[in-house]
Amino acid sequence: MPAPSPRSQPQPQPQAWPPAVYAVRFLVVVVLLYCFLVAIQLLSKSIGLMGADVSENFFEGVENPFAGLAVGVLATVLVQSSSTTTSTIVGMVGAAKGVALSVNAAVPMIMGANIGTTITNTLVSMGSVRRSQEFARAFAAATVHDFFNVLLVALLLPLELATRALSETGTGILAGTAEWLSGLFYGGTGAEFHSPIKGAIESGFDGIVGCLKWMGFRDGWLGGAGLMLGIVLTMVCLFLITKTMRTLISGPLERSMNKSLGRSGLIGILVGAGVTIAVQSSSITTSLLVPLCAAGVLTLENAFPMMLGANIGTTVTALLASMATDRSGLTIALVHTLFNVTGVLIFYPIPVIRNIPLRLARGLAERAARNPAWIVGYVVGFFVVIPLLGYLLFRSAPS
Amino acid sequence: MLRWFQRLGPESRGLEEIHVRFLQMLQDGRHIFDAAANSLLGGTDPEVIREDLFRTDIRINETEQRIRREIVVHGSIHGAATFPALLVMMSLVKDAERIGDYAKNLFDLAILRPELGDEEELTHLVEEKDRLSRLLVRSQGLFDSHDVDAARVFLKEADAFADRCDAEIDRRIKSTGKNEATLVLCLRYFKRVMSHAANIVTSIVMPVDKLDYYPGKAMSEQ
Image (cartoon, rainbow over all chains, first blue to last red):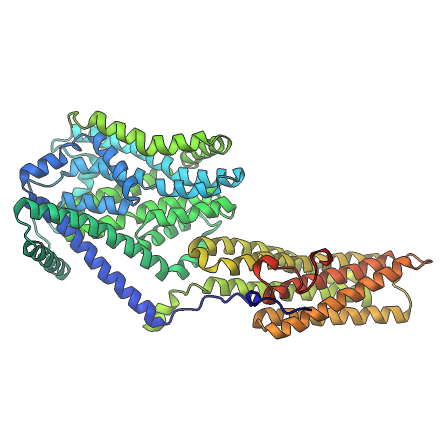
């Protein structure tokens, strides 16, 4: 019997990191979280530095709710992260009075971000496109999230607009409830909430603005540079937080996934929310579910509650971002949470209603598995063409 | 505090759990092989072992399915880093599951209460059964320890065992007179069980693309 080749040695299993490595990574996440909050305050306050005229022009195109919805979708498709979009919106809403994006204009944008984020798992499902049965399961798992979000927007956006029109204050039901909740936290209108965290964030902000001034930026240019830096820093921090946390919690993530396969809906919702809060990205959670569905180890019925949980979990990012802003920032972050929690309450408890997005997703997946033109048509049409046309049609329409 | 961080879970913990479950599968396979072979060759009443044998076989099948699910989950979360180890395990669970299947085949023979030949022939069969049972135990230990040198020795013995089974089958088929189909089938199952145990051990000395193939043997001989 000849000696086997050198590559025939046993496959080494990955070794556990020493605890100190975990501690350092955890510390890195805390630092990144701080940088994220500084970035949100930077983009929030930079809008004020740009001046009222500039900010008015800046937000003019999204005053119409359908244009706002389209911008929410397009922005999220572009950055592949609803957390980035919603955190940016929170920062813009939390800017100084007179220059900030209004809560009313931000509500449809938040809804749009919810829709746009689902493109990531739709793209992940393409990995199985050559194997029709596997692809049908993967595509259904990816698009059930799309259908849920679209149906939810179709229900809640008209309701928000109708209640806004009927309300004396001009506030819709979601924004009104969120405003009431944020009032509970801030202890009354107009009150300013101070905390050591906020003080530390302001120090970071002052440091960055000081650097920009030293580099020669003044007035409107200072605001523009701060806004751009704030957006870039938000994206980078969220990306690094997600990346680090995903590695850090891979063990518990695997165990909770294994435990939740085939379990009841409530556990799925909790696991989906928990994982998403930990990694700060619903796309990570939902994209993990797609290959499991493709392989047939997770049914669409069991993946759906996890996706709903991910939808709730992702709202924590905007809530975190609101720590760097004022009450308006918290209000719009709470709108995001209320919107997704309401969605679960509407769509999950009653089986007949729960089955609507499941059936739509299966129907589309079967067609897509038979004819690839459906895949291209769906992805390009749903995530690019329709939102783009929507924005172009409605940007000049009255709000 | 530092221990708390470690409890968050290393990348390999999921694989360790799969590894432990797989060892349990091998142990179950050896248990029902012994039970079925003792019933066939030693005269234990098949009805006495029936319930335990089928319950254990179901547990083996369920563990195989569970391991496969966990492999997919692990691969989805950790990506390419642990892919080779996952591919190996995906192949090996099938071998472990088949040992249980062959034990059931032996049990089916035991139910027929066949005439297995004279005293000498029976003694020879019992010796081969005992040898195989011991090799099954060694295959578990080797998989756990990843002892490359011991694995090579094991594979040589497995090869010799298979050759002896082949030679005996040839001799029986060529001989005339009594119907020896049962004996032939029994040897055939011994050989298959041995092959699967050896396949498991090939993971220690062979690369992923050559799993289930013995070192040094031509493809036509496999």
